[in-house]
Image 1 (cartoon, rainbow, N blue to C red):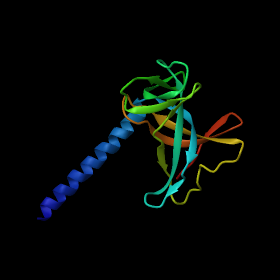
Image 2 (image 1 turned 90 degrees about the vertical axis):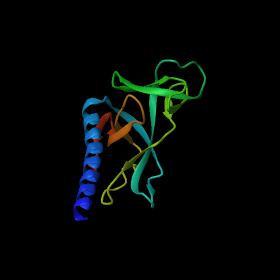
Image 3 (image 1 turned 30 degrees about the vertical axis):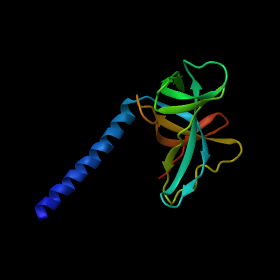
Image 4 (image 1 turned 45 degrees about the horizontal axis):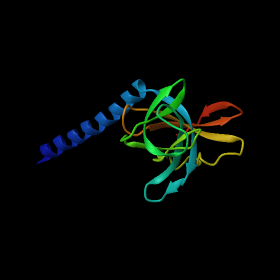
Length: 157
């Protein structure tokens, strides 16, 4: 009986480490980009502390004049996150003429000992570094603050 428990624990450990390894591999191989983030809803008691952020992308191909909601595929080019219009894509964006706001916000979890990074001075902007997988949701890596044109990653540990 003890052996079966150890085998099950080992399988769980292998599964968990494989997911962590995939995310680490993705961070090394997928395109990354810093994007301006709009924080909202800084904590939820059920899940702990996190910063929930909205991300805007630069319109890529397939957009016409006027607004609207559409499926988008994301890519990185020239240091910018671009949203190409693609019907049926799982990521949804709202085109506003100058940017595409992704409708699904990201959650960036923060330790209990760190001050809420979404509370910024008026001359500071919250930014997020993200990875952009070929399909599926973008993944936040870290947060930063832009002040006077200089972007500084936040130490959140």
